[in-house]
Length: 409
Image 1 (cartoon, helix red, strand yellow):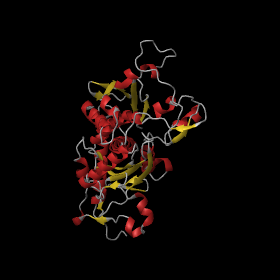
Image 2 (cartoon, one colour):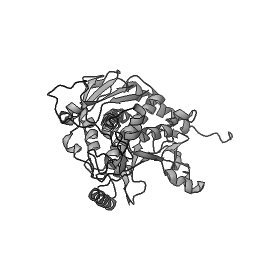
Image 3 (tube, one colour):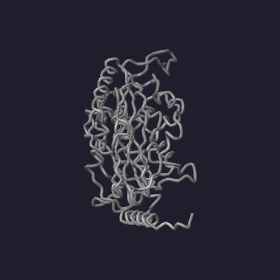
Image 4 (cartoon, helix red, strand yellow):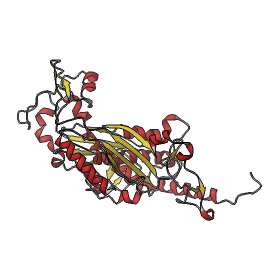
């Protein structure tokens, strides 16, 4: 079982993540972790905070001489902006006199669309900062660091994960089912992470218009995974279905309001003959496209999942992100201290973070797939995991390579 926990606040000293369940012997590429963290910070429409932070994860436990030991891996990510918030966010009852940063007043005007009001009611907070600091999407940096380790584990089985942006606001890409290689070829500093250049230009214009109006924009991104073996997940119990696990993981990302697998909601408007992916034999009876995949399909509308189980095709899952709740032209709200009507609070924020959210989506999908791989094949070391995966592939090849008995029907 692979699991992780995060801790930390948006303007606290550090973010912390603990990843439990990684097998021993995984060589950790720290530069790859940093690259994923930097991709989360990029994208057109990001705010001033991204100019301050230069995220990098420091391994504190669970790795020795570059390889996992089988113990939980702990990592920390420094918040460089802490020096400007030390007094406001200090954990001590009486912060030291030399604690840095301004003495900020309590936040009492909840933002519509944010966890501000619901969190204040739930935990009884008078100062909404106790809510917004943890509900902030800054926490997702810790998830990306954890996902980077999961991605490196998946690479041991030749499983790749990538993402691209399909829409921002009303600007949508014309590309349907973008090829995996085109997604993988997107540069890390792509402003929109969209494979359609014309749509990317429209997205940038839409973000500029929203910024000018003091408004924000959401959008849709897709995560794709190539090389996923058939048989991950299960239809036997509701909580083991991989589609449900993926949906929960992506819905847990701040501002995500809907998740689709394959063609998603479009399937509800079409006939079955227009939705389901036909199963065809390989030419000449050979195996492929993967060694352990006994058939080919002309389409992948199911997104690589049927009945909660991977079917050997590329995994395709998309997530819809609402506009960010902090508006520079704020919506109406109330002051929790006085009960009077007022404008919502303004926190430093982004105009659009959909390209960045796609990097977080990759991390969450990688974590779910890594957990499913370990569940399916097991192994306390990376070598053992690789051997079990290779043995399974050989078994499947042998099973479907047997001559068919014409009398057995």
